[in-house]
Length: 189
Image 1 (cartoon, rainbow, N blue to C red):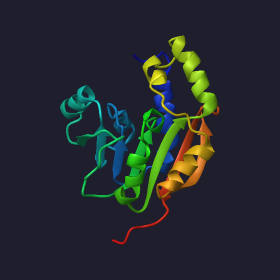
Image 2: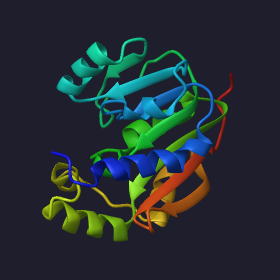
Image 3: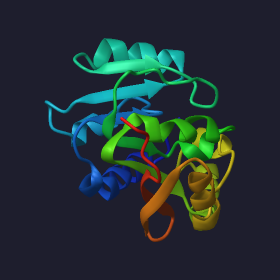
Image 4: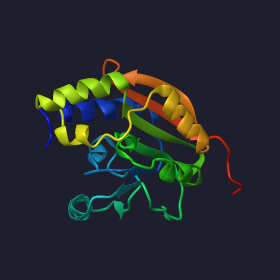
């Protein structure tokens, strides 16, 4: 169930990433693909969602876009294409095994492509947990948090998986973090 301010948080997340989106987009953990309302209608967009009910909803309600049902914690993405922008918006903190997908990102990025990650800060996770109990934020989302990353811990995980942080910033009064990343090493084309 959504909290009173869940839509506001989503909007602020989209505003934070908007300046960094370019070209073809792959959205990992896309949910209901709400990001589409912030993108041009002719945007090349591919979404990946784990939950069967959401995946079925996407197929019925987001015609004209490509969707795949995959578990980012364990599946290999075989999309046979690369992307200019890969999104992981409020996803990594819910994962049990983030290296499974992070190690695949370099092979999914076009040369010069970027990975955009948003995740709560440690401060933000505390506020979110308290707010969820009061019905201000999604209680379900707060209960599903597996890991709350600091700059250092996520930067280390990204580095271990062939990615580097080019831009780091906090938004929503320090409650959320944005990581703009690129591949450290390019595979031979």
